[in-house]
Length: 100
Image (cartoon, rainbow, N blue to C red; front, top):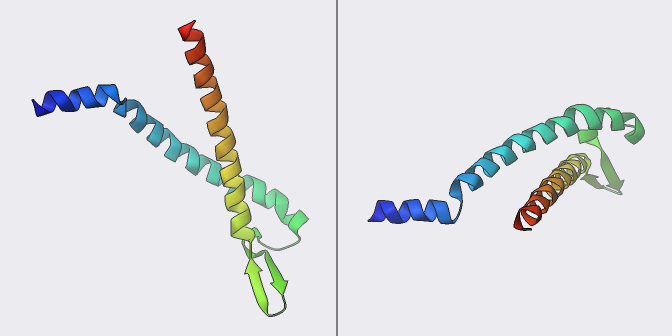
């Protein structure tokens, strides 16, 4: 009885698809992190005029506000959000076409 309900739950809520999406999301996060860290930030280093993008900081009197890591995370987030948007748009478009 419990096994039958569990299998119905898996089918109804598409748990397998969710698990696959989770794994793919984790993999794409690693890929985007590498893209930002190894490709984009070295290109931006000369523009930001510092030795390392992680050392970028704003100095206001005695206060030091390091924002280099935040900048990298902002790039990561932006790229991931763009990828998710494109994939979601593609999937939703396919669902609309299938319904017609």
